[in-house]
Image (cartoon, rainbow, N blue to C red; front, side, top):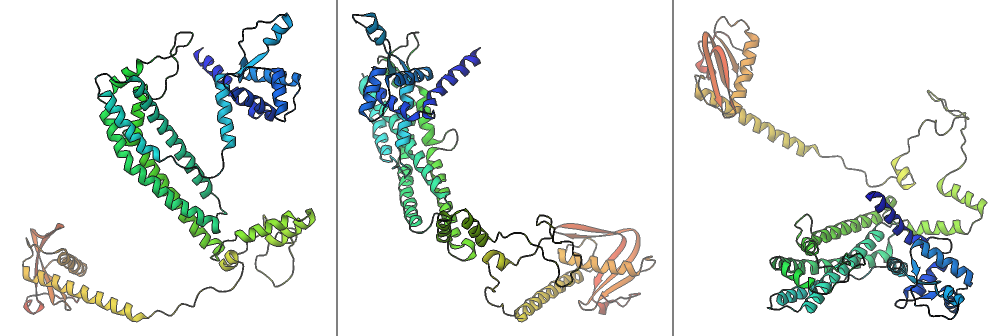
Length: 506
């Protein structure tokens, strides 16, 4: 039942906007202008018809009556409550046909007219209110610190603080909404682009600087207000507040609840997420990035380095001045949309499957060169690239080979210096060299019934492997160790390897 009641109230409030899109919206708006002008306007249908006639809107009394009754049905108007002291019953019935604007109906009309009257250009941001908010919060702190705070003055400062914050937020939102609308235009170019660029670079920097300067001060004063906030709210509660007929209090102004102050502090400090200043800076960065994107688009439009905006506008003017037949021919000539014709004959092609009756949807795609597809011509672009000089690559490869040879010589020297390799500690390069020679040795002597050697004449290194059942050779390096089972390994120079049984070239 509660959800049904809430849904009914929502539908009733939605109907307040119906007169703006109704068939006679101009007449309804003119009637609402009469009722929302002076304070507590009370008019009958006859007076509505007469005053509309003075404003140039012709509406009979019967039509005015129907319009007022419809507005009453939607909730925009209510019956007037006037003390009817009239001599006749007829005059009494006429006095009951008077109307007034309802609370929500008047608010909807004022907001709607403000939106309809608003311009499409940029709106000035009320950035000067930030500094005023700092001074107002200082006054609130000073007033609440007094022994007997002035409730009226305190209420005036609190209301001004939140009104300033609301006005600043609305002006900032409108300004950035205007920026988004301009930046999304694909035809932004020329002098208009330069004026918008100056507006964006100068004014956004001014807004960001003001917010960065005043936001920390406002946040700091909100923190100072936290310990005395209960007293502030208690002083504000002492002021008279109207009550509804059912006993419920009326809607309070901003700043009369703790949640209002918490939201104000959170906007500047960002205690529960991104703060308002951070959001503004992110929006400014996004706008500047989009501005740079538009600049790149203008410089690289259609691959020619210039914008085609003037050409498209000229083409649009030709379409505007053409009749239907000429417009079709102009479209075909401009975009190449000629009738489909498949011509047979010509040189023989392998695997031809497209004939005169084949649709373009099913025909074999034709490769179009990039130059023709992007620029509309077949002329070559750029200069012929020069033949690269292989001398530098040869020098780099020779230097790399010399470095590798030097590292292998150092690794061989490490192994020779170790001699008996069991328990020796060498570099990873020396270990890899040993494993390479050992793999070659084991490939040649798979049975290993007697000692064998493997020689690398370039490095002057000889590796001797002696079979020994149960004996292992463990070689250590900083990135791990290698264990060779049932072999004793020795490294020496070939000249000192007289006892070798066999030798192999590395």
